[in-house]
Amino acid sequence: MASLQEQFLKAGLVDKKKAKQVHQDKARQQKIERRTGAESVDEARVAAQEAQRKNAERARELNAQRDAAATQKAIAAQIVQMVQQNRQHKGGGDIAYNFTHDNKIKRVYVSAAVRDHIVAGHLVIICRGDVTELVPKVIADKIAERDPSIVVQIKRATTEVDENDPYADFKVPDDLMW
Image (cartoon, rainbow, N blue to C red):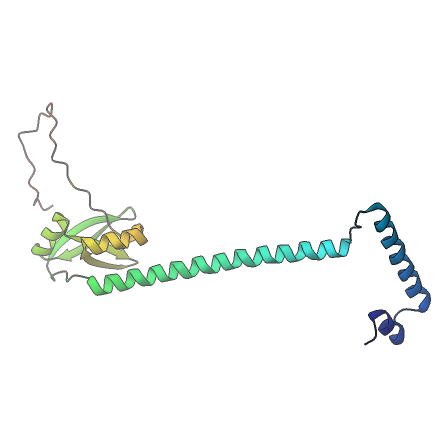
């Protein structure tokens, strides 16, 4: 197998004079390196290593983004599966239950028994896009670990009474419909 230099000479890409000059320069550089003990810096090699390092870093970043997207997709699939397997029937009632989600007041129609379960905290409302579902509290807690933004948090009324409250004797009933 002929060396690269010989191949260039045969192809006519370089002449003998230029090849001899390159060989002398290389020998001179090696001699200087042996004397001083310091290696010369090959800028082409350094630039190639830098480019390779940048490409590897970029590939790592792209892989991390792909992994994050795949993880998000898997979490979304888990949430959909949990909701589908554990959703509760709304009871087909005519009682409107109002709640807030994403700073908007929304409404779901449920039966009286289902409304009581929601108020008691046994059932929790899940909002995925335009779809509103009811799931048990245990499942809602698992969903909240994965994505808390789709679980509707119902604000519980406090039962503590201020001792200076002039209206303490006038209780508002829990089942008040407005």
